[in-house]
Amino acid sequence: MSYTRREEEVKMRSRIVAGSLVLAITLISLIVLTMPALADMPHSSIIIGDLSVPQGGTATVSITITEATNNISSVDLELTYDTAVVVLMNVTNSDFDNFFWNEPTPGQVKMLGFQGASASLTVPVKVADLTFQGVGGAGANTSLTLEGRSYMGTGSPYGNITLSSGSGYIVEGVPVFNTVGMIALVGLFAFVLMVTARRKKDE
Amino acid sequence: MAEKKKGIVKADLTRACIHTALIAFVIICTASLALANGPSITVTPSNFTPGDLVTLNGTEFKANENITLTTTVTCWKPVVDGQCECDMEDFEILPGVRFDLSVREVKDHVSVYIKKGIWLPIGPGTPGFTFVYNAATKTSNVSSVKIPTGGRYSIDVIGDAVDGAKNCTMTTTATLIIQADGSGAFSQVFDTTGIPICCMRVTATGETSDPCTVDLQLCLKGDASKDGHVNAYDCCCIARYCCEIPGYDNCTICCTSADVDGTSGVTGDDARYLARYLVGLEDELH
Image (cartoon, rainbow over the protein chains, first blue to last red):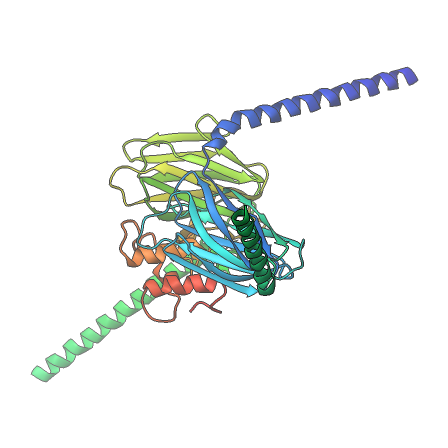
């Protein structure tokens, strides 16, 4: 009796394993078969670079649509960042005919660009340059997280979209210009030159 | 004598009028009664925007009969760079629904991508789908078998437009069979999220009862492109409509939805106002 039960258990396990194998093979086949067709599917990539801001200084980072199978008629984006690390100063230089931005909540920037009478854009498309001021201490960092979508000339959103977020770092600030030190340095240099010239003359 | 004759004529006329009125009244009453006895469907609420839940109530069907509910959405899209493309995002498909697509003014089969979790391409030869291209009507038709699992789907349909076409038409038909209760009534709730604000028609056809139809008007302020969403592309559409770019016309643009800035008429200011609203610089659409 016990032997029969074991036999049944073994059979059941074998069936489960066989079933799982069939399922796995089916899934893999489905993925392999659909991959080439999926490559044809309209897709787009939007990236924001990394930002390195001097402490107390400013730096600019660009948001760019680097890849799009079709052209681009418009874009809706939202960028989030840590206001304890950097603060947004300005958003400029968009390739879109019409560009609007707003920071309704500190650390959350909404951007919208669209083409009017002009033709839709082809990649690479600069969405905008964003200028930040570093307010955090040296070594502080924040992620620059992008969300949103771009739209084709036909109006359909790119269903397959890759949004690459960036990072913002605060680097050691440039030292303040030291006038006294510079005068001393120039004086020392002049003194060395004078001494060298006199030695040559003496020789 | 002449006055007496006039009086008689007047009396005859009055009698004739009364008879005509009575006959008309009887006809109207009979027709009303006949209509009242036929199947009917009502929509609650009567005014809604994409995203609302809508209840379809049917009455006066035969008890326990199977009813075929057919929802047809027709939308017009501008042809851009020789392509026409229609998409519906995150719309709900009920289990057991059969789906048909028809895109007119295209050169060949359309390419279809369906998303439920991940995007999957659907083409001629995909099991469960039938692709037929009619060269005479320049129409590509795609039919599905009953979709076993319901849920939220997105669909993207792309086709090469025939030369010279300024816009193309996509008709989407979802068919669901439900059963009337013992009193011949049914109630079906459906989610309008992602449904384009175009022409939408629901027809209920019983096995033996007469079909009845209701046309739904969906309106979403700002959704100039009539795709059921308000986004950056609507600004683009309004601007292109104002610049009279071919394809962006009264057929493909919903002027009522596009007029958002509080001043009468659709102008470039509406596009800019909508953009400002979308980034949070304006509080409301007018």
